[in-house]
Length: 549
Image (cartoon, rainbow, N blue to C red):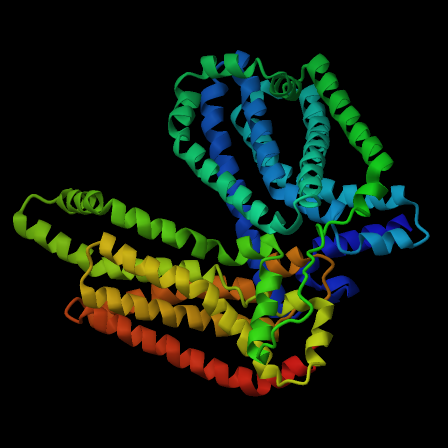
């Protein structure tokens, strides 16, 4: 039974390359796209880890007494990335997965289910940890062969596994706290999660902006950093163990194993209670006995609103760009003078003659609307509400298909809902950004029109892509949100399309063609393509949706 459950768990983990739980392979092109994107992600993480390890190696391998800090900081980096990458998986797959109650109804001991769920969480954390830690090991062998010992290699392997137990312990606790909080938030759960995420994101960005001095200290004063890090016993023990110190290595591994046993024991006691906790919040009652009759379109849009605001991950994965656009617009207006000074200084840098500076300012004026176009397209392409909307219907799609209405009304309601969410955030923000950059009035009008065309385009394009590549056999909505081919295609278009349009303007039309006129043409092109896709959605697309299963 454990073998079958593990197979199911791995199918869920790698469902991006499969179609749901049945194990059937997806089309070759779609699988290739996923492989390329995930390979890029892995290469990015490994690349940054390698550069960080190289910088630390040049600094901390000079003195054998501080070499342990190299591994200590590598462990901290691995734990941080693993928790960020795994904690929400823990929250969803371990505690609040959709099929938990079904599995508990089977004649399977709950400890087996717990073991399989924990193994999935452990594997995710171990994979993230390895992307950071293995480059540290490799660079250590290359840069400091004199510090390599047989006992050190053995402990590096043991502590690599032991650190994954520590990550599992921390993610299990954090995931439990998130799940526990989610079951007591009631009707405001989605709002609270979104606010907490945004607060954490803003805090993270503020922390990153202050890290420059700290990073410089890592390399300018390694002895001081190592001395301060030595007070953090786990990092010190991990670092010394990787260098072959048996006492610290054994203590770290034993403590990590105890943490694993502890978390498994605690969850064994309370697992059934956690899984069966009602996470829907308190029921909302009303004294009204009759509801006002609504039109079909109004009812369908209301249904989209209820689904959208019931899932915080839906909001964060499909609307984060629209949340930050108004912030960017307000900051652009507030700092209008500072922006102009910065642009002037940038134009003046490296130019001595007044005519060169005038030419540089003219180029900046030419490129500013294009930069806004690029930013809006990227944010809109990464915030397409319709891209996962059909997949999110899941098994409920049969209910929609049974309604006595034409399926093109259902599809149109999804597009309209996307525009209702996106346009009120985008258009005013683009106008504010244009004012902050001191753009010409015609440029601002053209950008506003183009932004509306882009929003509508991604609404119909994302829906058409999701209709062609739906993912209905999920056990958790986050699978449809994060592993959808339609979402990835929208992101790809958001990268490629604006760059292609901008390069065509710069190298083909030249600076003599008015910017606002070109933006009007691009808006027309987006509108024309959207109209053609909409025709398909209203005919063959609606027919395909009617029989989708």
